[in-house]
Length: 252
Image (cartoon, rainbow, N blue to C red):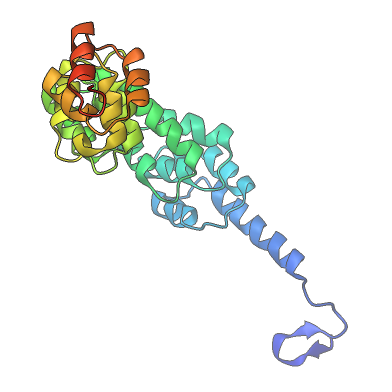
């Protein structure tokens, strides 16, 4: 056979196209993903590739030996290209603190993170106090916001310090029907949240805001807005009257 010098390719044979090269590479990946001897380390190395096609990820999900490994489940559930009919059921199988890491990972798709957070929130009543304290300190903002309603004061106070909490999440928590006096008082006295205008307005709508704080938070609010706030507020009527009478903007 006559060959073409260095690469020993037969003269006249066409060079492989990018398409055929890609197909060959995919076949190799499929073979690796389906290999019953695939180890945890090799599976994790495979999952580090961000360009894995969905077909390879589906094949890996069918690999009984590989998918038994906890770290493989986590990586497969959080891979950008894993089909949702695979990633969502996998997420629901993960341990609580693995779910926390999935929700915090910058590479996990946003909708998968939401599912991970939802599963953690659904488990809060069944996890231990120590686990709730850790979640309050380290979990995502949505999980921390759910823990603001925890009956244990230490958990609520720890969640208030979570750096991933946002103003909108704090407002949503204090306006929940389940929000009690302890949360309202804690937010009203918090060194950060108590100075936010929108948080103050939300607190004025709650039932448990102390009268002195209600007066303080109403200062600088226009009469029209204050009346609108108090019209939808759960504050006692006596406190509402005191706020309207004591506010320098609204007083005659």
